[in-house]
Image (cartoon, rainbow, N blue to C red):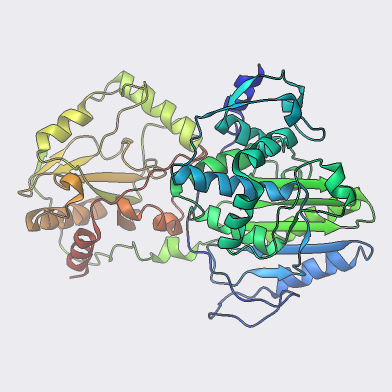
Length: 507
């Protein structure tokens, strides 16, 4: 594979579950034990004891660690955070500064960058070995900066933005221990005592924002996650969890090795950053950091109780309620061997299982953003999209007068909600043109009747939520997605409609 193709494809080879929740930053003392800003139901005592024990077992090395469990009701844990030499960990903040400029329209990921002889420096990365005059997109240069920790690429980006601009971004975002003072491999600056600095606290907060997709923007955060997921230095954390998706960055200089990022650990994800300084031996430092990662995984508490008892998205139990089948008009879209084949391909790519059927566990409500049922039906009818993938679809379509059309059998997969197609029934509602929250009372009643009927037909259906609630619904434990950065923000069918539907279901 040539250089251009390697750049283009790196970062897409690994799979990831992009979970989203709120990440609270508690004010913690330097030793990791401090007053809490909110009541926490889960203690950090176990992880604190383990990390302290491990760090003290290598007395000659300075260790710092940050741990946070974004789906759990507990505070962040910070062990001995202070400004430390950043090595290549500084590159995540440079990346954030670039993406902010992209967001503001001052830069484009597609813009060209020319590699000059004076850009080339030694150390990590392959760009210095390429011919002067070679042209790359900003996207390609950034990918190399993260995946290979390419020093030449990093210096090209620093030249593009300017050091002052990067430091302004760092300070504005509240990363108080982080400062960029020199380029990569600048021996003159290093001899003069100029170093780049950061801390586990700042890195942890950066990764937490990125996990929440609130770092720069959801779309650009996804790009950054793809870069981090393609990290080629797998010596530390990935060696312990070879099957786990870890979006991370490493850094190394004489006397230090760092690793930190987001561990997509099923329904118990966590953020872990470890930094060292003056290590007694490189191998020992990496081993202790790996043990810290094992401890972080061990003391995670999977979000399981919600699956059985329901959550904000749970459907009230029917008990002995009599449920009548609503009037449903059969109006099937084209389901043939081609659609089944494409559905299986989609499922294999996104869920890791070659399935075309489902066992429904949730119902997801949508709006069509169109004014007629016929236009939506026509849009869903054909098996294939222009890009060759299976077409979007839904199991049901509810017209504005409450008429219910069934488009697909409820036991086959419809492509209607990223991360949930494998286990959910989709219900589209005609309306929402230009984002207007205009779904009707007749549609509310029809949706409630349909939900109750489907719940009676499929006792494993425990959840109902709107398409716009897809991120928060990760708490149900149903979300699956193997493709890095595959996500889109939604607003349908609107909170007003969902509130009305839930109110009726409670009756």
